[in-house]
Length: 323
Image 1 (cartoon, rainbow, N blue to C red):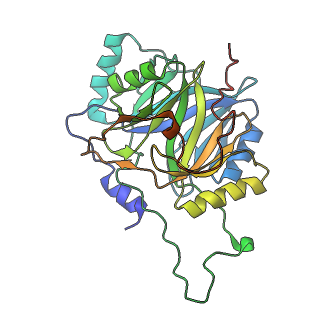
Image 2: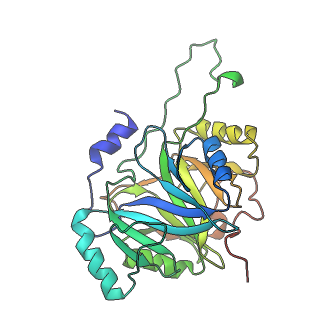
Image 3: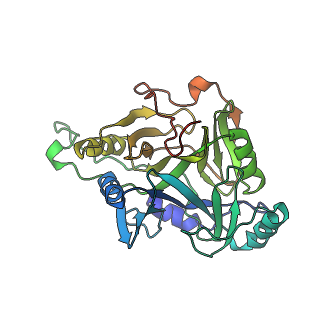
């Protein structure tokens, strides 16, 4: 059975008696130039569809819209995050938001579906009843072709096929107060801490089964989007994706390497606005029936096991000027 079939078969699963969002249904942001965004994400290997003054990001072979991008302003700006919830939890979430007094009107770039609220960082958040698009089982890696002895296993460079990510893996956000933001998503959205390093970075997952992190938060002076991470089928595809982007003129970034927290292999490509897109594979998985042993790790373990040195401005928030 393929990874897609496994995920499809268990997509309705949930942890009984627990109210929590189950997926990052969509992330939405704006950029100064849609044409430049379209060029970048097409080179990255996504199915980019233009709808008037909006770009929608899909992955080939998957019906879900993972992101929307609008044209506005002089710099990139995170507009809102949209989470998927189960229908039976909607009333509980609606009452919780009302009791806390954090409900807001729908975002100007959004729709009127579901429940709108503002998180403690001031970022608009939408909760919608939607199919679970976070994985419900650990993703199966692509198996390399069996090559007879006496024949090279690597493909010819001229015959390498384009890398196309399978799905959105996670989103990492900047936050001016990581512990406060982590507490908010735990108490209000029902997410759970996977791991953290001091008060500088935190990774959270859904108790309904997901990768090690569905969303993460990194310390900064203001909110913002640091990177979106996209699942590919093997470490070879991570490397081929990096080469694909270099050949297209997108040479800045970080990788190839392997993270400690989450364990995934990675390569980050810097986008035109100073944030990143990540090719990722083989991330740790947290099933719905397991309580992940969250820990506070040393800072040296917060980024990587091996790989090139971290770029000096890797964790720089370009969305808002620093004070």
